[in-house]
Amino acid sequence: MATIFNHFSEDKNAFINPSDVIERIPGFPEVCITTFSEGIIRDFTRNNETRVIAELFSANGTIPVYEIEYAGKKMGLFLSRVGAPACVTGLEEIIALGAKKLVQFGCCGVLNQSLAGNKIIIPSSAVRDEGTSYHYVPGSEEINADSTSIDIAVQCLEKHKIPYVVGKVWTSDAIYRETQELIEERKMQGCIAVEMECSASLAVAGFRNIPILQFFYGADNLDSDKWEPRDLTDYGVSCGDKYMAIALECGLAF
Image (cartoon, rainbow, N blue to C red):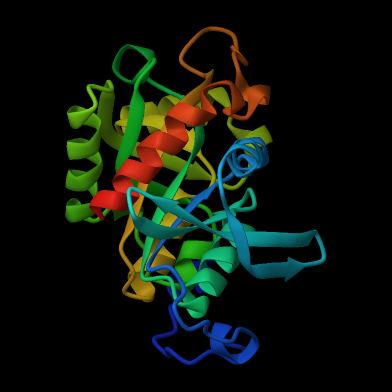
């Protein structure tokens, strides 16, 4: 295992590159918004004018890439699959299509209720407890978010008076192996939330020199004696309009 995580290949050219399987689309939106909630995208595309401009393919099925317009600015919108490897594959292909900036949002588990409860969470850094990021940047315990992207997110949330907190998150590959011991350890490290893709998304964006702006909304609560599912299985749909509005405002300011 030490060999896998400590030996980073500096070679920028892989055996299979995104450009080998994806053809760049002229005029592709510079800014693309992505979320992990199929329901949020479904509701948005039902209630707004959109058009499909590309598709992402895998054995899991086809993901449409939509072109949308907000305040006169054309942007892309697509679904990210859950889990770092699948998520990063989608980001790679979107970048290969022509995206130059990414806005990504989704749910997370709250590790510090007093700080993060009922607030939008902007990650300042992420603990790299997943495997994908180690193929994009050398090994380290944490990876930092881009300060410019953090500032844009903060400005958008303050402009619209939306409560938020900036802090460290824990990116884990195994939702069913978040033991009490590990939860306490991550809380001692300063993590205020746990999710599954942040550190890997930061890594691929850095590797491809593409800025990424991320934010999360709290779903379940892990900062208690007993797990509180809360609205985890709602997948953000009940507040989807709010989250999409934040993403669109961030995309506009990006």
